[in-house]
Length: 481
Image 1 (cartoon, one colour):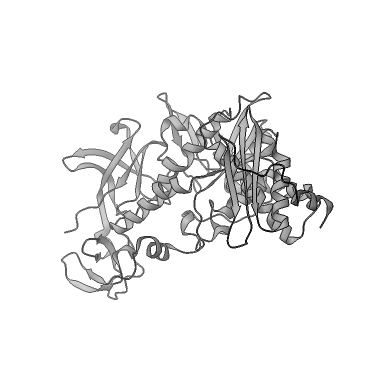
Image 2 (cartoon, one colour):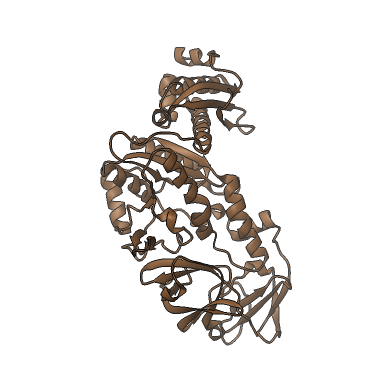
């Protein structure tokens, strides 16, 4: 055992119960046998009154003690720059086992910093040397380049990553919001010399995104969790954090732009139509848009990759993460089975006249417009026209029966007059099509300029006036005779 490691392994100067008003974080547990924790108070933008706890090997005790030594009295920015490498250096180098302990101590510190960041307290005053900006980072190339561009423009940057989902069945390496993604994003930010904070929003994500997703499939609809997540769960807490950090706003790696039509900010199309994420961001309220910036809005994906490579960003060639982060590595069927009890449940496949054509294993495995997996032969391909959750029945028919020029809409949110809407986008990977909104006794309907293949009930319809997003709604279920 090195002299530094021995010193910290026996250092009990900060061991004790958390002080009043402290924010705490812990890491480790039964899997490795080591559990470390740290609690801290923020006073005028500095860490004060740190207390630690440790259970396990000497390396774990040493790592958390060294972390407290590094962090005590540091500014928030200095503490948010502490990584596992800093802890290892303080301990004079570590074995592979010791590095694991440094990772745990680093996680504990950053969870405590994240608890402080979520506390609602004012964290920092306005930046003293130019504009300060908070940048949402996921460990992917887009957010890394957004961070790089903000710094290149002279901003004092903080990085933030959300931990939204942690599940042993999940593939954390291919998820944008797992514990593994948090560590990667922290490493990318630290590699640029940028302080990094983590917000643990797992409970908020479960309530606001995962539970409605499960309920939607149980009810026979096909919900769009990413629109809900961006609009209500993810971005608002980060925008709030930006304000409490004294930052001018929040920057993200989304491909979108903000434009003002004279009545306030609205989403506008990105320069790269293949990457435009206005659909996924449609749930954002205009008052939040005024505090957002999109550095990639005028760039195309190859340009972003080139900028990352030229800047030496470590994730320049990293593949993109899966959109539905909580399904990564498991897939929808397994997730629904484990979390909603939606397993095999035999039901009827019928045509529009109710004639029985075959059997299926559960209505939740089908969505309107689906062709594969129906398991029926015939002279023409069959598509899902509707699902009936109560009867566990799936209605199928030829492609022509999917076409309609009226789209029923539920829960519309309009940022401009209904008369201003001239186009609608029914799918993320589809172009907007001309339409007009009309109100009737059954609610709102979008009248399309020509019949189109029906979109799945529960999906999001995004409403446009020209290239500006002026509202959104949930696609309802049409009557099937």
